[in-house]
Length: 109
Image (tube, rainbow, N blue to C red):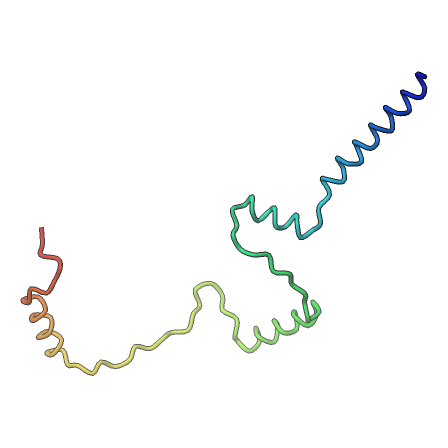
């Protein structure tokens, strides 16, 4: 009797342990989604499959570096300002007209 009840208790314990371990298993996608939720990250998880090998990417990077297409730090191209169509006198006149008009929402303190 004691042996039967011990065997039953042992098998019940094994079943409970198996059920507990089955609940903790999650796939990679589920783990990634859970990490995004706990990190307050609202971006969807987009699966990525590469079409290029690592060697192809490195070769492409070196080619771009040799061509001068890769910027470093604040090394951005200089954007030239378009020439103005108004003279300095026109700008001054418009500025005085704008200051004298009462269309401004700010009237001073």
